Length: 71
Image (cartoon, one colour):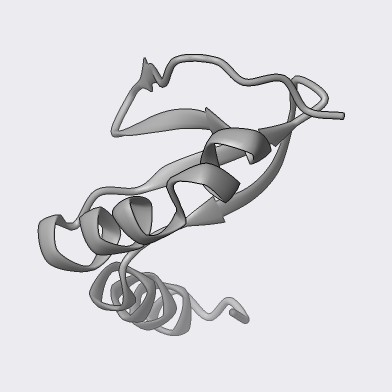
């Protein structure tokens, strides 16, 4: 089971636990969408998923396409 911890700043984003995400899902989604914040979600102290707003996601897809990479 993931532990609950305070959010820790990381370069360009914040790391949160799965438990924190579960408890504060709406808040994190709104921060990602409205304030262009992004989050690294950890499960068992290991990176699990990333959350970012749709504009940042689209920007990354464009950058990957321009670099000849696949999304």
